[in-house]
Structure formats: C-alpha cells, structure tokens
Length: 328
Picture (cartoon, rainbow, N blue to C red):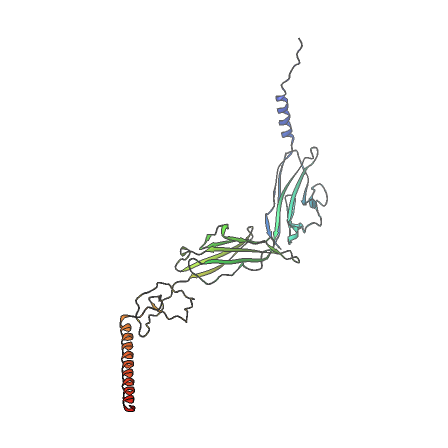
C-alpha cells in the first residue's frame, strides 16, 4: 500500500528565517521625541538606526502626523530639504536629528521618523513619538473661599484656581504637606476661552477640620499646579485654630451664683444682650435663682407692708366708730 511521504519542514523554515534576519541591513531604529516642550522653546528630535557594513543610507524623512516636513538624502545635492509644516533650524539639523525652533501650541502632535536603506534592499522602518507644546499659566494658582480661623468640627471649603494654560494644569491639595485624598475634592470641568484656546482649571476642597490638623495652633494648606515636568508652582494658606477666649470675671449686685452652666464661649460668639449672665473662667452662667439672704429681705418687706396695712385699717375703724358715736 502506497503512503504519502510527510517531510519535516521545520529545519528549512528555520534556515529561511535566519537568512532573512541576516539579510536585513537596517535595524534598531529608535526615535527620541520630547514629551512636552514650553511654548517658544526649541525641540530636538533624534532618530538613531543601525546599518550593515554593506548597506548605505538612502534617506531619513520626518513627518508631523502624515505631513512630511524634513528630508535628508545624502546622495542628493542639496542633501537637506525642509517643508513648511514646521519651522526647522537648518544649521542644527542633520541625518540623525532635527531641531524645531520657536514652538507654538499648534505644532503639538505625533512626530515620525522614517529611515530607508539604499539598494539593493531599500528596507524601510518608521518609528513615532508624541510631543505636546505647553503654554504655562501666567501666575501661580490662587486659593479662595477660605477663612483665616477655624475650630475643630468646622467644615473647611475652598477653591484652587489656575488660569489660562494649555493644557489645563493638574491641581492637588495638601494639608501640612500631606496629600489630601480625592474623596475630599470637588472637581470642576476646565473652562476654555473660545478666543485664545487657553483653559482654566479649578479644584475644590471640602473637609471636616479636626484638632489633629493643627500644629502649634496652625494648619497649612497648599495647592500645587503642574503640567508635565515643565511647570510646577504652588500657593499656601495658613489657618489658625479658633481657640476659646477667656472672659473677665464679674458679678451682679444682689445676686450670687449657685449654678454654672458650662458653655464654652469662642471668639466671634455674640452674647444675648437681653439676658443677664456672668462669666467665670471662660464659662457663661445664666441668671441664678435668688439666694437665701435676698429671700429673707423680700419676706421682711412683705411683713412691713402687712403691718402698715393693719395700722391703717385700725385707724380707719376707730375714726368711723367715733363719728357714729358723735352723731348719735
């Protein structure tokens, strides 16, 4: 019985792969594109590659998006060609790097380097990287809505604002240099200026103040604004602990304190002028009931009035009796 012969093709395929790998004259193409560059600065873009000894470079082309803006071809004269997509500094550019000067925010995007080997392979490889041109805010972030004094148990609410940047600044809060978890943030959407394209970022804070937040009676709040590694500015706000104030000791004539209602008085509390109260060691006392001595005085007064009334009634009775006797 005839059976088909099954050939082992693994060895021939491996040989072909090895030959193909050896025959590749262009390899290890690497591109270096800065992640972020400040507006107005220059950007240096690098493109590295490796060629076999028998291979020659045919061309290097740079693209912004899909648009070519720089070409280097060593076999041509002139070897360098610049197109109008971006502003290239010719004197600092060559086959391995290109310099873009006076960057504007509209040149942000993807940059690609295409390397091509010469005959006979004409092997081509392309590698890309993203670059963002930033316009930092004109000033430090501002902190608004906070008071200068808080007491434990108060709710601390405030906003941090970083204006007119591209992209919008990333904002964070810290208390005494300890990061506040996002749970206590109030995030707002960036506000974009339709004319300039610049954006304003706002981050709110809403947190319950505790006694542990105060170090030597003070709490330090800091808002930090960052954009990549190009921009990093912060503003600080110091809050004092609203401690109890000591009120002067006083007394009211004819009254003694029998009860003290322990109610702490803080700065800013307004006493009720319609109620009379005394303060001892920083505590308020409501009007106390009359003491035993004052009550005795009041009883004595009532007795005197009673005796006077009795005398008046007696005199009136005697006079009336005399008049009746005289008439009869």
